[in-house]
Image 1 (cartoon, one colour):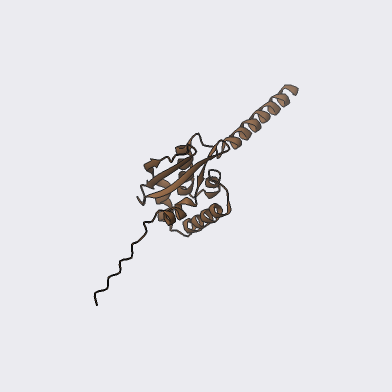
Image 2 (cartoon, one colour):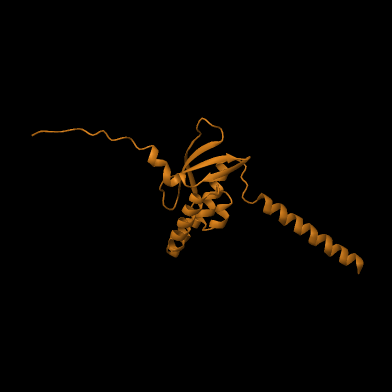
Length: 152
């Protein structure tokens, strides 16, 4: 009887330790592309709490992720199924001067509409800066030249 109890306790402890190790590795990405892929996949699957594990947590990112989740929840079941079955297409990878910042342009096979994510390395961990998707165009738009065309 004592051997059975000891075996049960050892099995339980082994499972507990294995689960704890998996929890520690959840949200960790091996590299910049892996972080982007993990974030995108979780979002496509409608797993926004999981997506947050791969995201730089600040108020703007939380706000934009919350908006994306609400839009997803309000979508038709057909759209949700389309996103879940979609594959991720990496269109291009732009690595700026710093080795800790990468810009990933991607699309998915359901909508095939390119989007942009910035992935940063912070404290040894690659994280998606989701707000870049919404804010990056504001500083990259060409300035319009105003031509004074007075043909009176």
